[in-house]
Amino acid sequence: MFDPAIVKFVEDEQWAELTTYVTLKYPGIYTGGMKELAVAWLPVGTEFRIGEYDGAENIEVKEETGWITA
Image (cartoon, rainbow, N blue to C red; front, side, top):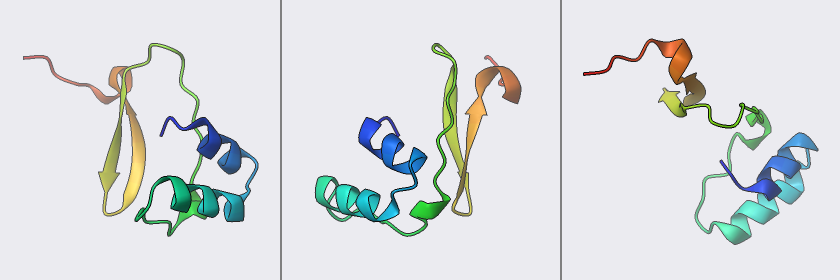
């Protein structure tokens, strides 16, 4: 998520290079669906989390999701 090389490959749509890079740097990583990756830039200090449902991921920004504080 925070690897600058991955961000660059995705932004430049260099899918073959991305596959090679992640395979070498992160052995055993799942590489299917990489062409569906997207880069989203958030303002510094934004509180967020990555949500996942049925294989699809999304960004949840704290101010936009109605979190509850106990």
